[in-house]
Length: 114
Image (cartoon, rainbow, N blue to C red; front, side, top):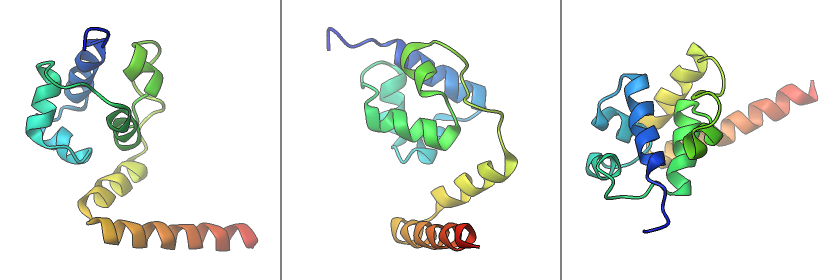
């Protein structure tokens, strides 16, 4: 772990606080246990690429900012509709998430053919 840059762990803390989330709420959104989130914040756990992707997709955070600290924290202004979709999607079990994704793909395909 000598070559690991713990600055990303600090940015995770900064992100969580910017969102106004507790460790529990933040970790639930990215499908991580609260103890793992705590481990990240006290620098006992590394932030891997899967977690980076989950944070970026779930919270709209810029991957470049999260990895390097450069640029803006968030990619774009928050869209309330998108936030609601993400929140509800994260509450579903994986089987239902797969169903929603297939249905969404079908809707987009139908719309594009019109």
